[in-house]
Image 1: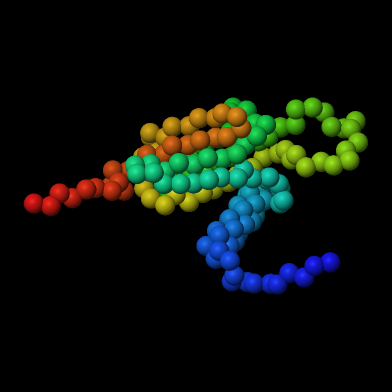
Image 2: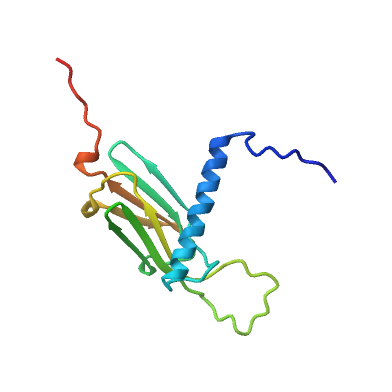
Length: 149
């Protein structure tokens, strides 16, 4: 048995804040899908990375085992919504599982976008279980260089 010193604010505080925000976001997304009747409490939700490039926002969502036909993407105002359903490939009624960690079922994940975007020009690709969305920023949201005279 070893003792571990508890340090609530030790280490990389930004990492801890990010982990807490991630966990809180997942909890509220799960609650929203349960409340709206589109998912089950404790059901799965894809993990995402959202990052900023100079003229676009990029969203990468892990959705292993899904077909692109089973994924829906929509943007309204500052909110990106991913929804879909991962279906069981084989019948499970006659199987006795020792461990079952792969979940199936529907999901709904809403992600707040940090800036105005041009939703008409979104590029979406799906490869190796990862959905990648390249979302161009709206003209008024792009950084503009000011020339000094």
